Amino acid sequence: MAESLYSEGDSTNKWSQLTIEEAKTVKVINLLSKEIKKNLKILDIGCNGGQLLDLAKMLGAITAGVDLSDRCIAIIKQKGHQHFSSIMEIDDNERFDIITAFDLVEHLYNVPAFFDFCKTKLVDNGKLIILTGNVFSLNAQITQEKWWYLGAPEHIVFPSRLYFKYHTPFQFKEIIYTYASIAYKEPVIKVLKSFFYQIFKDKYTGIPPICPDHVLIVLQKTNTK
Image (cartoon, rainbow, N blue to C red; front, side, top):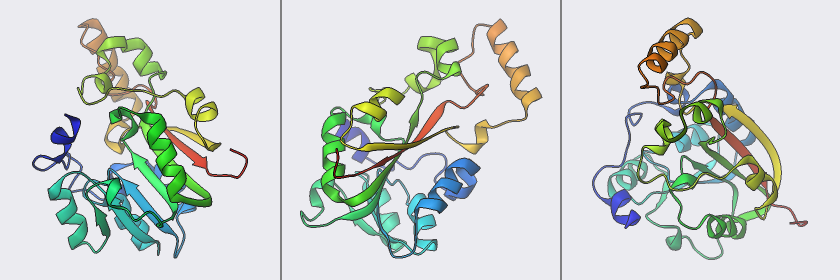
């Protein structure tokens, strides 16, 4: 089961020792800094080692995180963030101003149920901010089944921009095209050299990306949806 995969051992990834400012692009950090304000309550689902929560706390927000990994829970507990091992642990009456889900929706077996849950946990006009791979990016279209983002067996679903815009119980507010991490935003000459060499060898998997291959989506809970 997926729960066993995510909960066993240390699920922190290779960016676990980096702050979110070091790991994510300027576009991502700028949007988070714009949306997260002092005293707002923020819940990060799939929070890993709490890097996003660290930024939110620095901005004055009240922070909470959910992660199945015992190791991750221990880390965010040590950092002073409220912590949950499952969304089912969150009190029925608890509400948040912002919910974030970075590199999460592609893991879900029931995406509509996730959106319904987030809607119940957000205050009116609260926002859901999602970062995920863009299966319609040029990198994904060029590489097709070789695209690196498809290589992880736990990546099972890839909602499109149209899905986010028309098929969730939220109002679609903003989309930003970005990279999975700042490490993939290499100088153009270096990217092109690597791209053409790997294409020639028929080994290109979309790394390094020749353009942004992720999307940052902002959705808002309104009374009209």
